[in-house]
Amino acid sequence: MITDIETYFSQGCGRCERFATPNCSTRQWSQGLNDLRQICLESGLIETLKWAHPCYMHADRNIVIFGAFRDDFRLSFFHAALMKDPKNVLERRGPNTRHPDMIRFTDNAQVQQMKQTIVSYLKEAKGYAEAGIKPPKEKNTLKLPDELVEAFEADPELAEAFGALTPGRQKSYVINLNSAKKPETRRSRIIKFRDKILAGKGALER
Image 1 (cartoon, one colour):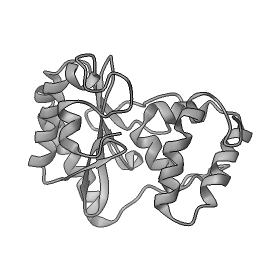
Image 2: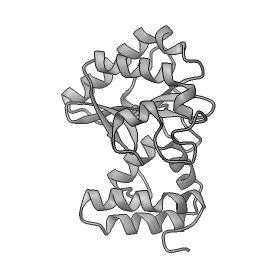
Image 3: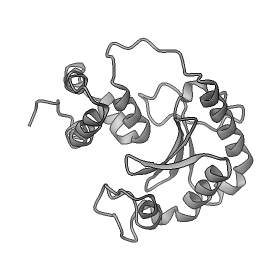
């Protein structure tokens, strides 16, 4: 995966064989992604690279992250349960997503058309970060590590694949990740586990 954010906007995320080719999804949505980037920066967000994607922060908290796919590109909000969504523009990434958390674009021109709405949503999310407000914890049968939750928010394909696993396979990953003491170790393991999760396997399966 890439380590420099400029590479994302010029060549892609580096996660698949379409990286640095005309077929990369970031090429198709280049104008829209760059428009989103400008809006985030104008809104005073700090630009970072996480999970090989542009991630924007405020008050030491992740606010939004970009994603580009064949059929659309997305602006996904962290802590989406807090968002009021007065314009009813937020969508769920999939059936296992608890709260609508993304604005999905299917045309590059939509970003400029929705600029004022995007700016107001970013302002709302920044306000929660500044106040230290987080969504109430929801009851889960499994206590997912924070790093895994963050990975799901950044990687909808991974989130959907994990949700489709049997409870036993899900538990195998949670146990493995929770056994790591350092956050960076957990993040490294998640990256290594990604292909197995997409393949429908448990942590101990080959």
